Image (cartoon, rainbow, N blue to C red):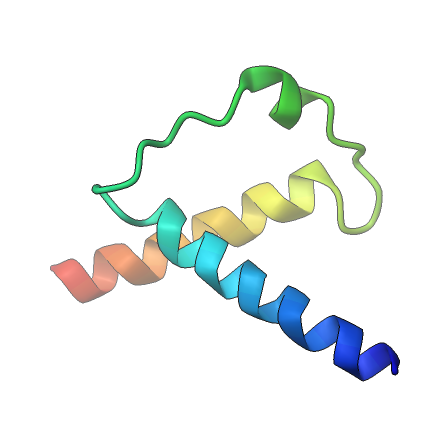
Length: 63
């Protein structure tokens, strides 16, 4: 049951990651959603690090 619930969530995460790299999608997450994130083990700093890794991969592919 838990795996069934986790699978769609992983798909959403991939879709959000792809969307964050798209120039066709407006990048307009309100600042309060970013600054209001908790900063636990998988919180704000973790997500910022993942974003940097993803963008690094995208930039390598484009050059």
